[in-house]
Image (cartoon, rainbow, N blue to C red; front, side, top):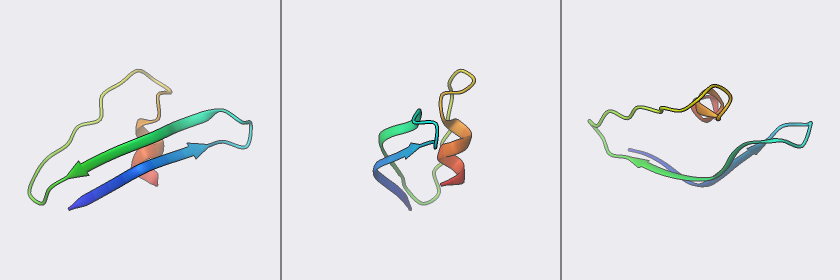
Length: 47
């Protein structure tokens, strides 16, 4: 299981990449992050 609770990431410039993300992915499940460029998808995966 992957669980994120109220996860945030702010860059040194002060801009928020991810703000208060809560996500739970049960074992054996597939999750897809979809959104426009610059919305924090890659940042979320790197945390």
